[in-house]
Amino acid sequence: MKDKSITVEDYEKHGKEFFDKYFYVARELGEGAKAEDILKIMETLSGVVMKKRLEEKGVGPFGFNKNADDEDKEDNDAS
Image 1 (tube, rainbow, N blue to C red):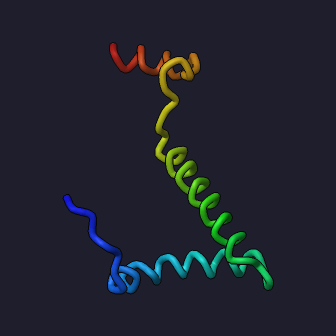
Image 2 (image 1 turned 90 degrees about the horizontal axis):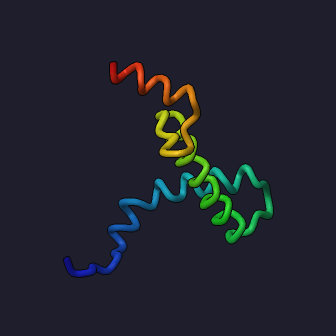
Image 3 (image 1 turned 120 degrees about the horizontal axis):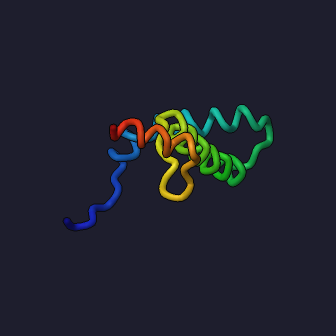
């Protein structure tokens, strides 16, 4: 697939979602917040959201990170 330039139409299509998030964070940080700080918080907050989504789904733990209760459940499920 050939790389395609980002168009104004792409900005129009996806801009509302971005700016809703941007202005939410700007309001939380308060008057005088710098764009650089807002973008850093947005990035960090995205990481928190992804981590929480994984926790809510109950994904993991994996491999040697399992605790004894998880192993017991697997043994009972296999029976």
